[in-house]
Amino acid sequence: MGFNQKITDSMNNYSRSVTSQQMDKSPPELKYVYIGPVDEKTRPFCLEAAAAGAITLDDIKSRAWSESLSSGGGINCRHNWELASSDI
Image (cartoon, rainbow, N blue to C red; front, side, top):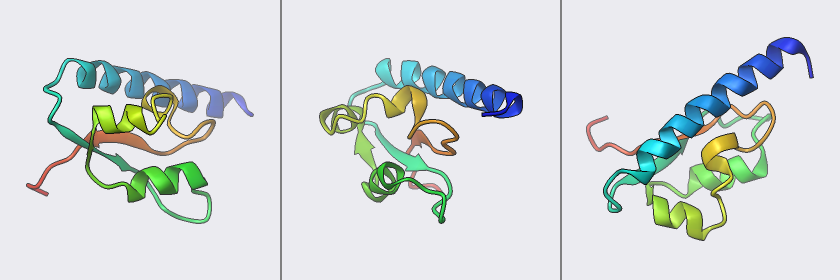
């Protein structure tokens, strides 16, 4: 992995960690979606999480996806959990 990719992964993981901390302090009924591109580079884990639709933090953790809250699907992951909205 090149230097630029390490920086990108670090910044993405930092952003995910901040989002995760906000999720921990939010009402438990809020729902989240796993967003990002779905293409030939998308890992099976990311496809599964994206297909889950809007789910609560407890749902994320009960499916053993807690690691994705800080590291997504792994190195070079382009996905993250975001608050689901019906306004979009």
